[in-house]
Image (tube, rainbow, N blue to C red; front, side, top):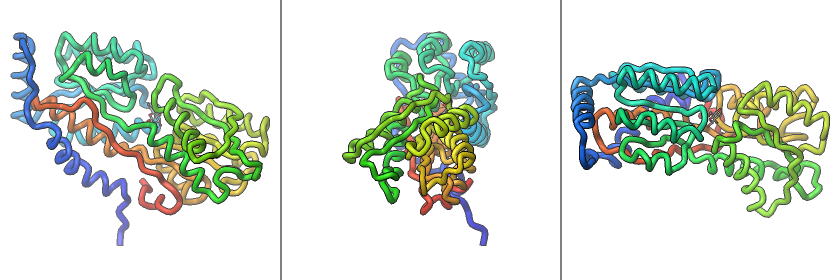
Length: 350
Ligand code: BGC
């Protein structure tokens, strides 16, 4: 009998589930005062698009060369196309100026909805100010802008994401659930290094903070040897962890990584230094990338946290659809993280 992976199962059921969940929050069409003729004509265009099931969607991804966003992007493209939309996806190449030009081009082409994964969340307000005159709705994804940014374009702008505090807490819990509760050498404290993602990204900030908070909330003493700025990147983390292992040696009991790409880099260096995860060091990441889930199953990683690309892409596609149809859209759509350990990892094989 062929085993269906949890990801395939989620993919198969996601669109149906999210439709039900989101129509429950939406329903009535948005009320806007003083509708200008531009608004009226774009509303007419939107409802025409909704009737014939077609609309043009412009998607801006901060960088194609990002493992997690690659999964997310292909899910999103699939769901939007399944809805009958024509989809164009641009690679911001991790450069805000490049992305801003792409947004301007989409506006000139008159896309119906923009889905934006900003390069810099600090530029989200400028993005909104640029888009606002055209009244094109924006679905921000993955990199959470300030609430004030969403408020400044109320009814035309929302955020779809996951609460990164939850992923950080789960990482700390994964360490507390180990045999030594993170204190391998039994000296009464958990000594760790942290590999961090892009410092202006709230996911990186919260995961760094809440993974450690889970330990201290449980009454544990902690010592941070170093926090490395690895920008979500495997190779950078690999080099930094190699240096850390030669500098701090056995003192390092836990390697926290804000994402799995960096955890995979860390693992290469851990193995090269002849250290053994689960025995003399612990390693946790976030995302549940295929390779990382396999490493959890094989005991090469202590655990990871599912960053649900399927759930988030589904919600983003559904929010897009609500905008196309002129229905009410909530300001936030949150998708849960899930803790992945050796016990349940087989459910998350992709
Ligand atoms: C993911 C990272 C990814 C980042 C991109 C995070 O939610 O965990 O793997 O690099 O999003 O913004």
